[in-house]
Image 1 (cartoon, rainbow, N blue to C red):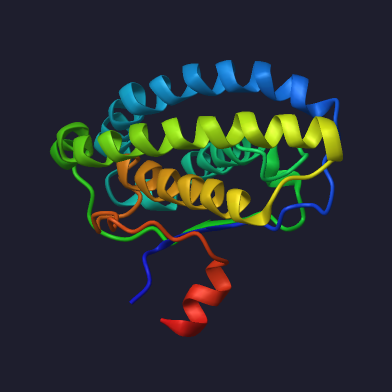
Image 2: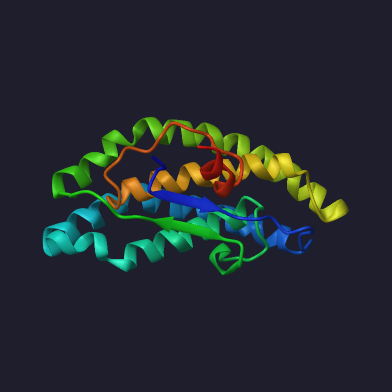
Length: 190
C-alpha cells in the first residue's frame, strides 16, 4: 500500500536565470521556516487536536500550510520556477489524512521524528551541493541534468512525508525510502 502523502513535480525545460538570485534569499527563508515547522508544528497540532478532537484531520488549514511549505521547498531546490511551487501546474502534493491523533501522540512526534531529521539533514547537505551545481549550470546554460533534479525531487518527497507525519495528519510512520522517480511511475510499478 502506498504512503498517504504524495509529492511530484515536473521540472521545466529551461529555468529563468534571474530566479537563481531569488533562490539564494529563498534558501535562507526556508531555513527559518524549517525550524518553525520542526519546533512549532507538533505544538500547533496538539492544541488543535485538544480543541477539535475528531475534526482535526478535516482541517484544511494545515494541509494548505504544508502545500505552501513544500512548494517553497520545491522552488528553492530548483524543481520549479514558481516561487510558491504549488502554483506550478505540474506540482502535485496530496495528504490523505488518517488515524486518530491525540495530544500525546502529536507531541511525541518530536522524538519519533529524530531519525528522519538526521537523514533529512544529510540529504539536504547533498541537496545543497546539487543546488549550487544547478544554479551555476542554470546561469550558464539555462538548465541542469535531470538526474540531479531527480535527487532533489526525492529530498522534497522525503520532507513532505515527514512534515505530514510531524503535523499528525497521518498516523503511519514515514518510510525510510528515497524515491527519486515520478510518483505516478512508482504507483504503476508498485
